[in-house]
Every structure is written in structure tokens, then in C-alpha cells.
Amino acid sequence: MRGRTGNRRAARRCVRRRLRIAAAAAALLLAAAAGCAPVAPMSGVRIMVPNPPGSGYDMTARTVAATLKDTGLAGEVDVFNLPGAAGTAGMARLMYEAGNERLLLQMGMGLVARTHLHDTHRITEAVPLARMVQEPTVLLVPADSRYRTLDDLVDDWRDPAVPVRLGGGSSPGGPDHLALMLLAERLGIPTGDTDYVWHDGGGEMLSALIEQRVDVAAAGAGEYRHAVEARELRVLAVTGPERVPGLDAPTLRELGIDLEFLNWRGLLAPPDISDSRREELIGALAELRDSPEWREALEDNHWQDAYLAGDDFGAFLAAEDDRVGGLLAPLGGE
View 1 (cartoon, rainbow, N blue to C red):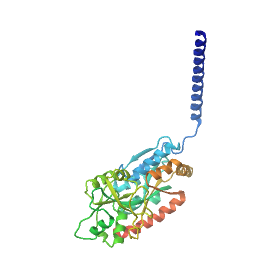
View 2: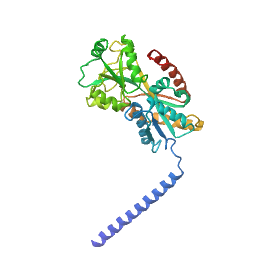
View 3: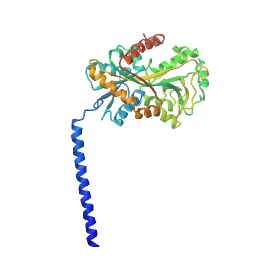
View 4: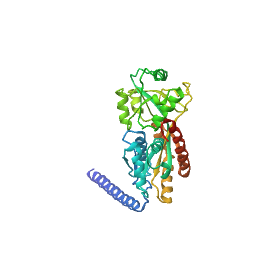
């Protein structure tokens, strides 16, 4: 018995030795392969967010970075915030770093508007990579607000004797402000009489709502989803053509208001990067967009796929620059 037991132990030790040798050999092969494998095109990229943490831009950039890593399209992607000058400090930094092939700018409709309202570079001066997402705006109130429906809000908003404080996470001319001003216009409320309070970033806006320093705020549909799910906030209406899954709120059209409004976000590179690098970045973003991980991120954030890349995105930006400039003209812009 002892002999057979000893033989079994010796056999197990032999198997373990062989497994260790095989594992070591595999590790050496993987290391060798890694040494000659091409670097993922988005590895080492830094995504600049032109406003504070917690904003829609910030959420989008961090979701892009995390999903690039999850899909293996990048190792580490650094996201950093550079707020200032209502977002245009980030645009100036992008222009200053002309030729930097590892820097991207997270942007959208809000930044288009801000370049019209501030003496800065226009978005058409940068290299267009891709428009990634779009989303409707939601009209938010604190959970215990006296406004149970949008009609309740509109009744007070139309009454000059009742002060209604409007808020948003974008500066005047940005998507939150534009959504509210266009709604006021559709309701026949003079836009010059509206009290709009700008809060720089999502965290500030959330505090202002919960503390009822503003009565109603406009924001991206996914921006405060956790606060809505936690029943800290309620949604009165959404500005898109359809209801948002997971939000118990009607569209403006359902409420008889002839208005649809969608915000969008995309990525730019600095001027003077090489054509080959531009195509490499666009290719990586196309792969990202086609991945199941990105589709899951869209669903989780209540975003819609709005992918448009390269020259097509550039043409869209030029048209959007003209369109937003026209929207701003009656509101005191260009």
C-alpha cells in the first residue's frame, strides 16, 4: 500500500512539475509575442474634457475610455478635465497642441455655441474624427417639487407675477440653455424674461436642484439617471421624438408642443496631425462603435447611436456651426 501511495504522490509531483514548466513556457511565448505586437492605436491617448467632472462631456469621455479598454482597442486612456472660459479653454488648448497625435477633445453642440459667444477658435479649425452619440434633453425637478406635470410648470412660467428659476449645466448658448429658450419660444414666453442660472458641470446642477435653488433644469437624458432612479429627481418631459426607455415621462409632442431637440457629442483631434494617424483614430472609433460593449454603454446611458466619421462629420460640423449661430442670433449671440 505504501508503495502504491508513494507512486501516486510521485506521479502527482511529476504532473505538477510539467504543468509549471508548460505555464512558464506559455508565459515566455506571450511575453515574446507582446514584444512584437503592434500597439493598439488608441493606447496612450488623452481625452480632454472642457468642463468639470460630472458633466455630459465628462460622462461621455470616461465611457469612451472605459469601453476602449474593455474591448482591447486601448490599454490605458487618460481622461482629464480642463474647464475655463465656458469650455473654450479646452478648444484653445487643442489648437495650441497642433500636431499632437495623442490628444483628443470631447465636444458637442455646447462647444459649437460657446465658440460663437467667445472670441476663440471655431470647431471647424480642428480635425473631425467622429460624432458618437446623441440624446434628448429632459426637464428635471426635485422629487418634492410643486410641479407634478409640465402643464403645472408652464402655468407659472407664463405668469409674470410668478418667478420661475431655470437651470442648466451649460453656459448661455449651450444645449441646456437652447432647449429651454426654444421651449419658451414655442410657448410664447419672451426669452428675455426668463431667469436662467448656469451651473458649470453636472455636480453643481444636481446640488442646485435638490436644494431647490432652481425650480426646473434641462439636462441630457442620461446625465442624472442615477438621481432619477434614486427618486431624488423627477422628469417632467423629454425633448426627443420618442420616450426614453426607463423614464416615465412624455415627449413634448405628446403634450401638444411642436418641438424636438437633440444634443450630440463627438471627438476632435488637433490640427496638423498626419492623414495616416487620422485614419487610424477613425478606424479605432469605428471598431468601438461596432462593439457589443459600446451598444451596452449606449443603453445604460440613454444615449442614441449617432455615428458619423471623418469628412462626413466635418461637413456636419460646418453646417452645425452655421445653424447654431443662427439660433443664437435672437438670443443675443452673433
